[in-house]
Amino acid sequence: MVERARAGDARAVARLISLVEDASPLLREVTSKLVPHAGNAQIVGITGSPGVGKSTSTSVLVGAMRKSGKRVGVLAVDPSSPFSGGALLGDRVRMQDHANDPEVYIRSMSSRGHLGGLSWATPQAVRVLDAAGCDVVLVETVGVGQSEVEVAGLADTTLVLLAPGMGDGIQAAKAGILEIGDIYVVNKADRDGAAQVARDLRAMLLLAERAESDWRPPIHKTVAQTGDGVDDVVAAIDEHRGWMQSSGELEVRRRRRARDEIESIAVTALRARLGDLHGRAELDALADGVLRGETDPYAAADKLIAAL
Image 1 (cartoon, rainbow, N blue to C red):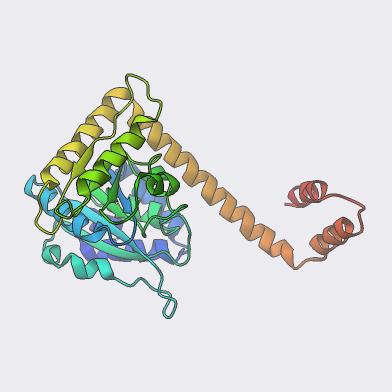
Image 2: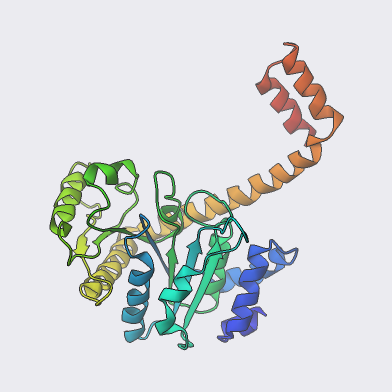
């Protein structure tokens, strides 16, 4: 299946991502086969408040990257439906222009209630697309709020989209997006207030303390519906990639990403083993000891860890 995915078989790619989402017992073996082929794709995260035009912007970015001959993968993380538990697939509707392009792979993933703007399976799904030969993987998040900023830890380059009417610069600071963006895009720039949004954003970014050699996040204005300004954004993505490679930041970010993934897998495994203990008498006995004042929660936790 991995060999077929590397040869460009979309069905094999889909099946591998499904194994990831379902936490299949085959996942360990699949990951071991994928890792030697991964690490080449440029991972670009796209985030912003609901309604700023993330899906439309992603679609036109795909078009611009395809013009330069790049093979593109798209992971669009949708909110989970409260009725079916699945993704609402709104991104598929907005990306029909690329539906028949064999060099573009689009996959909607349900967040399944996971906070942070991503699905828990997104990092592994990115690896599948990377190993399958995508030059660029675009990861579009659930609408960012005041906690959904995980994409910065996953992506090499993070694009933050804003639009007129979505709040002022203070609101942007509250949402936590001033800390995560490598490139800022004011979409719907043909509307009143776009220039003011750009000015507010520039003023807020100037408050950040940066060394002379640090990356200075640019601000670009676009109209995704017509494609205006999109080429400038693609150029900024390439420029940021070049800066990361020359400064060593790319290796720093990817090492951090690997560490986070290892930690997440380890914590998940420990939580599963703790779940096995949850119904046992040992845990009940520790809880009773805390309630009676015979021990404290930290000492009880130490005993629980020792039992593992």
